[in-house]
Image 1 (spheres, rainbow, N blue to C red):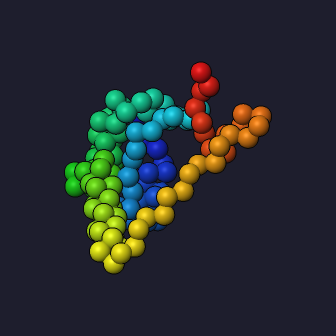
Image 2: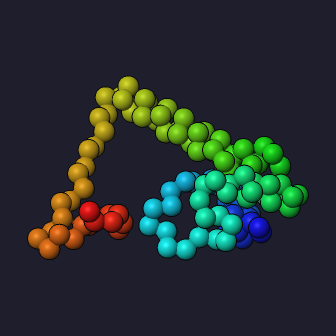
Length: 111
């Protein structure tokens, strides 16, 4: 398997501290060959390591450390705003219209 070019492109443009990989395959019509589901991620990581562009630390960031770092920062901002007395603004997702169409881009299969 060859790593998808977009991962290296994102790394080149934004830097290794700003790239991550998720597990949401909902609504995806086409996936790269060899990445049919999350069970294939170890193969992706192995290929990236072979490329010599990625280190084990870089792979750890890609696999989740970057996300954890960002969410810790988000929680710090939340706590700072709460300490200043600012409450979150809760907004509801609009209901479906009279034809049953959702305003969400992907609403999943209808049951």
